[in-house]
Amino acid sequence: MQDSIPLGRAAPVTLRRARVPLPFLAVPPDGVTADRDGAVLVDVALAGGRITAVRPAGQGPADDDVDRDFDLAGRHLWPTLVDVHTHLDKGHIVDRAPNLRGDFLGARDATAADREARWRRPDLRRRMDFGLRCAEAHGVSAIRTHIDSYEGQAQDSWAVLAEMQAAFAERVALQGVALVALDVYRTPFAETLADLVAAGGGLVGGVTRATAGLHGEELADLEDLLDRLFTLAGERDLDVDLHVDESNDTAGAALPAVARATVRHGYEGRVTCGHCCSLALQDDAALAQHIALVRDAGLSIVSLPTVNMYLQDRVPARTPRWRGVTPVRELRAAGVRVAVAGDNCRDPFHAYGDHDMLDTWRQGVRILHLDHPFGDAAALCGPAPAAIMGLEAAGRIVVGGPADLIVLNARSMEQVMARPQADRAVIRAGRRLDRPLPDYAELGAGAALA
Image (cartoon, rainbow, N blue to C red):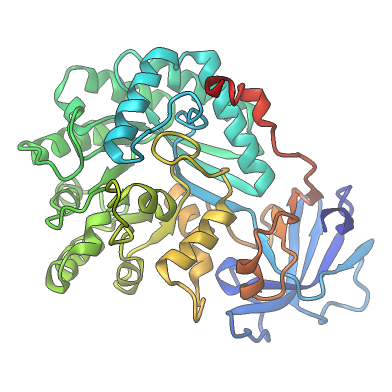
């Protein structure tokens, strides 16, 4: 289908009879009627790399001055998507650092060993560039990546992140978050790390476990560590993004502690928490109490459905009993901002993936039962993660915004879900993107298997 989209130059064009899910429209035009999937038919005019008009289908002016029209005939038109939680620095090491058990402990240990042995600037540069090109080819235009930032590693990793931000400027908006176990914040290195993050325009972050521990194991000084983290962030006016309660511990002690620390430090609306798996195992009363804390603290929650289903409840020779994903419906019903994201890609924490946010969203819809009806499920891969990243025009189709779009060969949400949309057409700044997926041979893939 890509070759049939006549967008080889930036001349004005109107994409007629485009089917757009309502969550992607910043301002739905008057007079449109949503179909059963919550999508509407519109004409979208493009010129100079921007969106110049969004009108009800067939109601454009007779003297429209566009040079060309293209009839999408009801096919879905989406904005380019936003992946708000990734690990580009870990990506594509699965061939050389396999997780032979497939569980969290195996992932932690295999990653740490590979990081210490191989994560030098040329290696980081090659793999992060590869991952970003995959994402761009799939139609992802904004990414937030967590960066392992332990002492002795942080300077190299943040330097390469800065290189990638420069190399992909105007292509993929890229944010960085410092990722360390929370006990690092009781060490003198914490101050150095916060300064490094501030210099890189990033976010303060971490994982609510000890360096050699697992989620669900008690951190006796959790409150003190969170206070130290928030103090460092506040002194530098940096937002916060944390990995929280990625386990089957029904107590889920870290999330309410983060919510209380957020309020204590006046950080409402500036904190994101990823995973929060243990919420799904709490009884109704505890769940309601914790969701109220999350809402009142203005926390944003990111669900990582593919990776959490891969890691959680993995026990040798036993079928998993639970999905390991956070209760998205209940959080959204309470008014909490929620997004889905891709998380790990071809590394010990998740052996699969391709930095394809559309694929992540499709899997998330199935896993989280966000269908029948689809309602505003599309918000979880566009406007919601864009808002978390503070990107006003990303993840939406808005007049005056960039003509960054995806055309799908599907005329209903069921068709979007039924096929992987490998023939999607990606449009950037009004032109069809011609960037093929990079070849795994660039990474030397397979050498470790010989």
